[in-house]
Image (cartoon, rainbow, N blue to C red):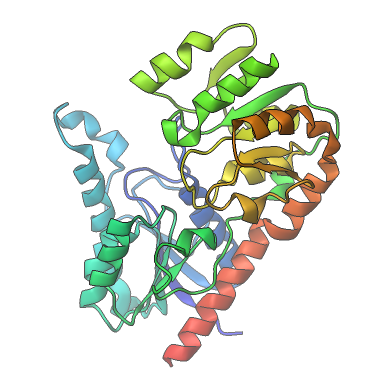
Length: 358
């Protein structure tokens, strides 16, 4: 098997692993891919800010400090979305600048939008993007505008690519986790659980109303902000049964997963993947989710949880959650979502792509 030379980049703003209170799943996914490819004998140069620690052949920072270490230098009025972009673009430009000298077989980039113009102007370099965000109509137009034969897209679910089926896709590759780090429990859970950012799209307020209606305990875990959604849809209902836990370490999070009766995923948007569903089921917690985005590709309806259409169906599903065998949840995750299976697929796609370019 040919051993590849790969340049990889996921985020310029933060070190890897990400700082406390920063939740960004693509950073974990990229680190897993790098670690396993290096273990298999491939060379991976990982482009990341100073202070990053990831298992790679080399970590290349270009002396770039992580944004969170210098953000205090900027005025409060600064547009941080634009500053974030600069940090990403700096590392991506280093990748393209070094590509010929380092003889990379391909560049693997996660923040797609930042790299498109550079990839278009360097047609000799194969560039593979992993898509982590929804392909909104405006994004599809941009992808088409900056398309070229050297650019390839890896979707993380089949649902994700539906809005733009004509893009230059490689195989759909599901995100994976290190299952050995997720402790399983076959015992009946004690409470309902929500894990994720506290925002309207995630359906936190719907989870709160489900728990309230059923008089069930609900633990809410994830970062929040003091906005109208929080103050009107969630805060007034916090109390004895509904508790906001906030940010917790991975180790503590695993215990919340394994002791949950059910994991609620009442999406209000078409999420491209939903890694928390995989994490919950790996620990034995069945998922009750609205039928949005990739849910039907992850949850086996009636076996590892319930896929529902509306609030009333979600209520009934939670009432019947004990019909789900928690062992089936774990087995399903072992078959489809182990990180080594994920890397197997990346490795095959990368090798196939490079062989076609020869």
